[in-house]
Image 1 (spheres, helix red, strand yellow):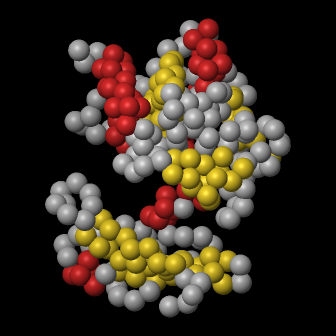
Image 2 (cartoon, one colour; image 1 turned 60 degrees about the vertical axis):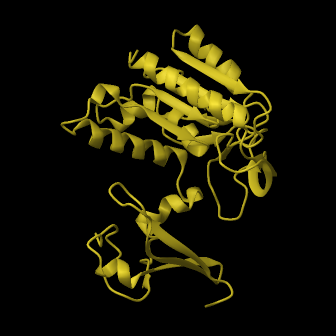
Image 3 (tube, rainbow, N blue to C red; image 1 turned 120 degrees about the horizontal axis):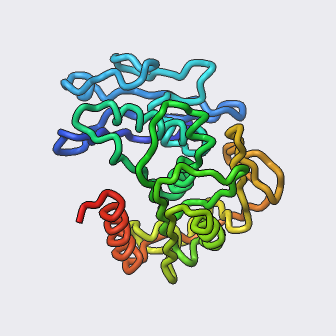
Length: 287
């Protein structure tokens, strides 16, 4: 194995599986400044009855398989590299998921919400924006939105779907700052929208984690950044004027700084779960 190669052991653990099972190994090598991905199935996985085709570029045979020249990675693993997708891409994904769920005969389409954490928290907010919902145009709408320590965007057009929004974030979050949420939620309320932000004292990013607070040196802090979601789907960092563009190993915008704190705050963890439960119960009238 090359010294420049990294290997990730991939496990499957979906509904119906008692324990995680090894699917294979995803490897990435750096060759002439480019990342080359390959995947090799575990032989026992290929022999099992769970050997579904999960990616059109991965066939059921042993030995390394490589991505096509026009692809940066296998589609099923793109979420393992968060920088490879924009928040706009992820909003489209959640609406496609909503469309699929809404057509299921045992699911009430009027009672489907979206919840996301960190970058997913930004998506939970942005998916409530009416212009992007209308642009996707599949006719479906989320019943509620819950953002866990997500970045608060500004929007070129201040129009939302009207579905209730809840933001839960730590006071000391230096990855996705809490401060922009306060005027944003006030503006929502002033315009008649059902929105609330809860800021947990002393809590950092990832306050619901299972690990202790520590400094993540490679993490990028956005505390001095402000993002504008435009009606054409582009996301602009307004302090620099740069488009959202996650270059591998580089900072997105000049406003970013390196190094963030992340980890569990037990009090915030308990309180946020209770608050989220109360919010969902109120919206869906479960009491």
